[in-house]
Length: 155
Image 1 (cartoon, rainbow, N blue to C red):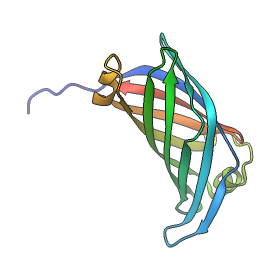
Image 2: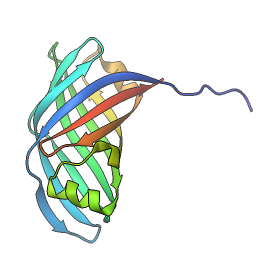
Image 3: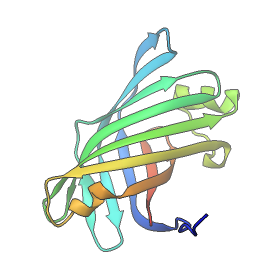
Image 4: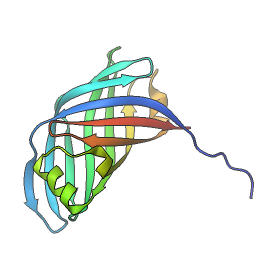
């Protein structure tokens, strides 16, 4: 087989996303459905900054006592005024005890939680169009009033 490149990671941005209290839809046939409104936040890239605009949400499915599937959708505005639509799918797993604390909105040690995500970006900006053509991964931590994440470009 021919040599294939081994992917590497390059830091893309750190995010701090402020969230409101969850709205619990309830236990559906798939699990516990929750919607968590996004209030705003900050983005710090290597040589750029942005803000998370209010109005997005994190659509969560608590699958079982250990696992949650997350689907966040929101818009960020760069310091240059460009808008970027973000879709961020994630998996969060932890022990049943830690997961219960997260669902209740309690503080937990991020080391006790596996939180990995795959953000994708869409923009009308010609200068930033390249981000729609790349694959990104990330890691995160849930706090009672915010989610912090670090995104990496896979190169």
